[in-house]
Image 1: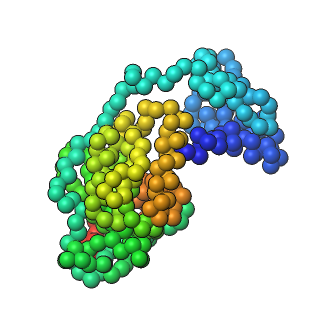
Image 2: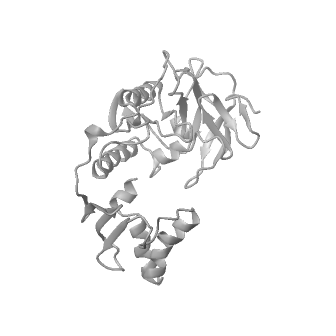
Image 3: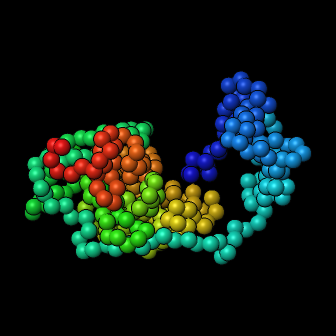
Length: 300
């Protein structure tokens, strides 16, 4: 989202392709008619009778800077700006935020001397199962920031069931605070990662209050957030506004010690229980390779 808004999307790919020697017409075919035909869109991808009049007017075929954009024959953008203001007041806000959050929702009672940890793989959405000795304080398993083992939780947000899956994750590098998001594939419950229960709860409650979104908490306060009130997945603001919000969000995460360049993207796939090796849902840890739920403690 941030990258596309600041650097470019398909126009950037076209610019790179031509610079590397691909014929401009061939490159354009690759991102228009070829793609449309592959996915079966018979009225898209070309300027011809019977095709939808989606048109981009470029300055040249080397820089691929969009000068004008037409959608179904209507001018919608000129020189990088929409021709009409974004109709925020008329946008259908479809929130999905039915959450039951009990007292001390993220406490983990210590039930053994071995705990399973979701170990992230840099640049990948797969994970590894890591076994570790839990850090225990007052009979509770807590985050171990010295070894980069943080708490992770998934809070069910659609039916008020009260389901909360609890676990630990390695690879985010937070020294303090918490990150939370309602973008968590594919069920899109609330996912939160943190160094302490207080900040985790503050971050989650901010998501609830916004009707969905992304948040960073530190010291019991929200330091950055991005509202996503449309199903907890989309903003009603324009791209420029959202880009600014995401910049502040990533900066706040980095200030907590996060070592990932895209922590919220990485978070969003930790709940996808179809990609190996180990993931977490609102019902607990999932061993994807064995297609079964597994206990947090123990070597099983």
